[in-house]
Length: 451
Image (cartoon, rainbow, N blue to C red; front, side, top):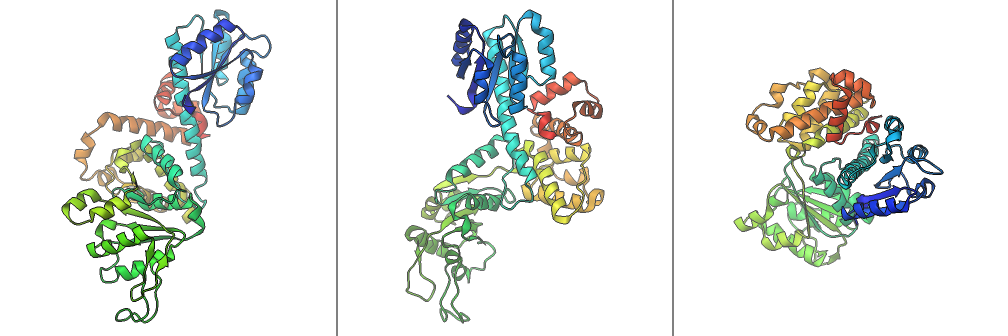
């Protein structure tokens, strides 16, 4: 069973426990049954990835008491109550007190399974949001943070955690501004190499005439103007991590030299016969498809396959609209801390502009905009016309997705401004409570994440 499919079922009648356990297991859920709430409580924790189903009528600790005890462990833990006809008023009160839902007897297997699956999805998002919120709160702490709740970014963080300490060479591919160096630094910081140097070289910015000296070093007198020995970037990164950014711009001659160094893990400085052993992790980054470049003859195919042990593909910002609001608020907090400025709260129309813009500069462009907004406020030149200039074609695509993203952003803005107060959000957005709750459930928003 998957870790995120755990269910605790509490009922004092054995035949009910057995029947519901079978129903839930047929839905591919991992079920643990108890005849009393006291025995289930020790399994619960702030990071337990599951859902509890509890009958209200129990001989010792009843469902209401269990709910209160569970909330003392984690107030966001989804607890589903099973009620008889006479317990409806009690169940309604439990909902007000924080229960996820209640199911009235007799209930169908389909109703039980669907309710549990929704609660499990909410639990997974709650745990993920806590991690992201910790990242926001730790914005002034050192070290890179990869922020995002879209599936692509969740997978990226999981992959980084899995491969960071392996020492394998990595290829990172993504458009300009998607965060390739941030990912490389994250790999370094989460590995045992973090106490050694992280060295970044932009291959496209180093003149062809000196790139080999820059990478591999040289001895005094190796060529004209080589007046003293120079340690190259590979040696400087020895024991640590070397990032070769824009590697697609490296000349074919230098690629031959690089391939030999990667294969042998040794180098010789220009003008020297001494072999220097290397213990360095190499991360290559490219904004183009290196395999296509290899087929076109501008990049060595053998070097491509040598670098491509693990390939991390970074999505453009336009493909992760759900992350824009979170990223923008993160950059606002960072900029406010950096410049010692009060962070202004964006207006709904401005957030709409963010959600409908194509972001050709990706995350870097969003970060720069956040800094301008903190420094200049309404004078930063942030107008809808400017942001949307030249993007009419992109705006026509994925309309429903963009509308959903805008609606979610508005609710998030209101939750942030009101510290999670549902009443204040209702007043600000002028929508009924039920409509608000329906939309929060649709977008997996939890008021407690904004308090």
